[in-house]
Image (cartoon, rainbow, N blue to C red; front, side):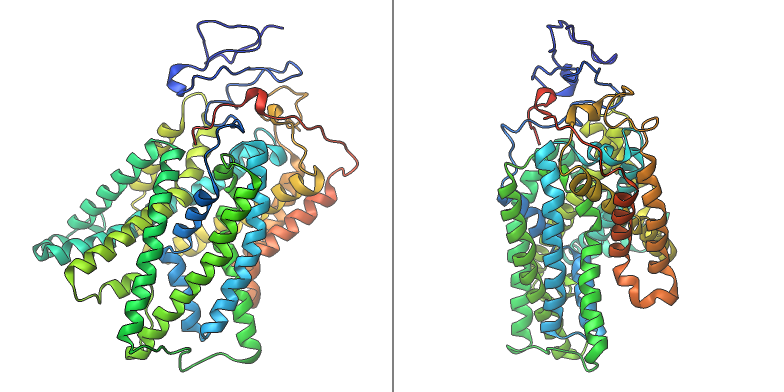
Length: 519
């Protein structure tokens, strides 16, 4: 049988069933371009970055997975959320319980999502083809990627604010550059934003393996820095803290806030549980995922919760004020050198969070949209550029955009998760024909109707509507914290109910068309 090659891939020689990817794809492996049944792999679905990864040579260990969470859990946004629970009236043990409930749920969800990546070796946009179809998958990947692009810009802006504080502390004369506004941002703001933007683009241009190395470098720094700040705050408060505010919650309201906080903790990670396979496709084994998640989620989150309780309780004891994030504490450091060190650590943290949470998803989404023309580096530059030109500081300062636009898009991620999980685990029982994910042949397993699975769309729409109504309609205020769960649950049940549960599924490994893991 002679191999049929996608039009935009023109190797010099074509041995039977194998060929060599072009040099610009950064590959030296010889890869077949047909499924075992003889279906041609399409250049509109397949390239070096979208191809499944070979099991041999995968580099993401338990430590790699752990450092993802060592960085992301300690993000400034998460601290603001957890300290907000203290402001609402939860005490120390209640905050730890809320975070613990969320951690247990996340541990299970992330394991299920992560196993899909290590078993198939494919990124999230390709994984979405299983349930939504080879064309319908664009809906889920672009939705996830669109949210991430905006947050990439916003997080870069927030990091630039910390950078500005550090520079002004070292060079007070720069304060003059922080006054006049150009398109809503001061001259110093522009300089710091562009500088951080360039740093992140350089890191991501070297691919997923560089991101892995950066996360491994940043993780210990963040843990040590946050623990040190907490100890310093504890000493400033005289060796004790306030365990609650003057308006502590009790009874039913306390328990609603605890469970609501745990649910929101899961919703915060609703984006990550969706595309965790982008990382675990290069994990060494399922055991490495479980171990990394165990130390990174429940154990690390308990440490995070303890730091939150100490910081918030110490500051409240000192002057009755409630801080919003560790950045507020950094401003209080009297020593300029230590202030600079703390600011640098927060910058390292924010960049680490941005790379893992807001860069990888849009890169794969864009690569999936234009696989003929984009690879990881090109897609990274494009997504980062979009995050710049939208002037994210103006969006961040607009509550309507943050709450309704980004909140609305985020509210749809739960239903997406529900459909994908129900299809993979309940309907197919993990049986996937990986080579068929890359063919447009009408007889392919994931062609459905013109490349779209109508049942996935049917399940997605009502679940999304319900999730948005619960999240934004004041009447459902008491349930709003659980909107992600309602959306995911309704979508999963609907999809499973309307699907043909009597059909049989074939399983085929992606190893015959896999490329060496460079991630």
